[in-house]
Length: 483
Image (cartoon, rainbow, N blue to C red; front, top):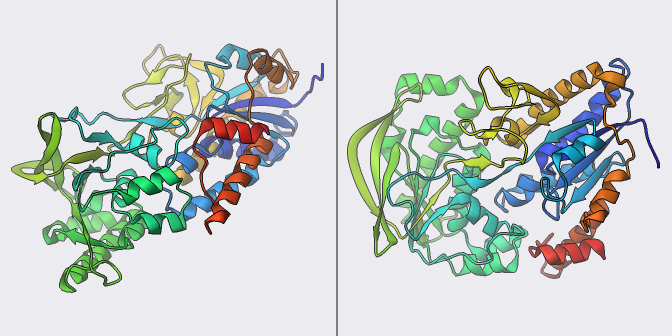
């Protein structure tokens, strides 16, 4: 038995939240460990249910985001750390239980993401042709257990949502397949699917006004550069009152977003004046309508299929309060995509806060509790949550870093108060988890295994003059990783 005296931490989820937290834990321990009586050494075991790491960065963001390559590269550098041990293809609750982890680790941190859509909740939401964004994102990102084909036969489509996921979905539906292939790692099935896409008209419906949307400036700039696509706006949506402009100016990101939207308004006017062109002045064969203050109220159907969407005009006050006007309009569409939020995953043995859609934790400080809220909610020792698991599906990847620092600070504080300098797990043999998984026939994929998958993807991409080409079959990933 090779018993060690280092702190032992288990992290569930190898997406940005899990990787950032692992890195920050080791850094903060190095800085504060001696002072807190914890020492400066820790072993972090990072468990991921998918055969490959990076979660949201690899499988939750559109492939044409240029910044994603940089984020993935930074995450990979973090994982290349002898104190962080990657266990991909190991599912919490199935391959290993909470009690088994608590026996072997001094603390367990949940950094699980989100794979389900919030339900649309409109009449007609069950019609054929209504899709949640999450499943579509899984398709175009090549999620290992996602579908391999997607029906893209609607000529007129609607996208509902005022955030970045709605923008991603709309952009991919308006994408030129060859342009997308040239600059991204999409697999062949996605290329063929988008090449056959019949969509010619897209309507993006945002319930609130220009100043209340939740788009990032980067998303807007990507929307501006779609070959063959004409952007069309409603002038009235940009008639903002002084109070709204003043309120928007208080927040830097909101101000930048509004400024970019006004740039898009000018661009849309130029496209129309130039004879319905795209951003480069070429004839546009697809039209992308952006509707603010437009709340879909019903999906209309015929023979069980989508035929139109009914939308109510709204007004939005400076403080973001939306008021319905009773004015309705119908738009012919044959498909409706809703991107109105994700529902973060639950975890076996951990209470879930259904109202806020995250793991139950005390006052948002990341300490897991016995129930969602109320006087009976007690903190459960040695259990923590970070990222979307802690706060629900809000915030960008950058928010995950500030989350991680808060949670790590709380973890170190709790460990320093625990007996024997936080070393409370009964089984301190670092090889114990490997024996347990092996006894169940579970073959984890480690960092070296991931590098083999990555090398293969780069080699396949190079054959086509691309940097990368995604492997999507989980069995192929396993074969490559274990070769």
